[in-house]
Length: 225
Image 1 (cartoon, rainbow, N blue to C red):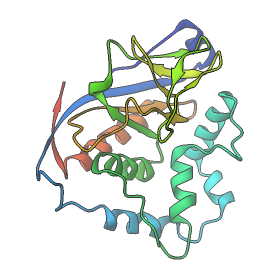
Image 2: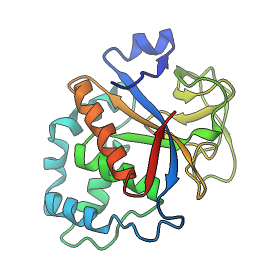
Image 3: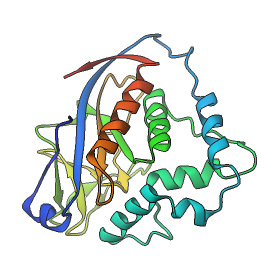
């Protein structure tokens, strides 16, 4: 059982059947520079699963369909904006040859492996950036938000689904993370999140979060806060 992220009343009404489960973990590296850990074999194993599949076959996968429907509920065009797991599969794993591996950071890599293995989108961010409590809410409009990889902040429109703490927007939920909460080289405390949507059981999300922790244990000793 994992704690549930609180939602505003408006979000609860809009997203019936949706829950976001989370766990706050402290990380102690098993090897200070993480040089002994590689997820290359894991990506090659996943490539064997998806190699040669068509986009239609990926889209028709039951869990990917469920998260595409969730994206449609949020107002996204799923031909242009793909759920994260579908995006990873189509960008890297469908080709005949795995010519590029999405290596980012051991924390992000571990969570991405777990997400693709379980077909459950997972989120992870630096817990030290959080001020107060985390919740899912709708933007009022005009909040400052600097998307990951952007040099300058922008202002959000009203009624955008966001993950926020008491002081700031952390992400446009399931769409864009922020510079404020990104995983950094010295990140040692994280929030790990999994989103349950209609047609996906809470047990499936629990299993995905469990799998992410097993992958992280290859690099870190984990302590639950």
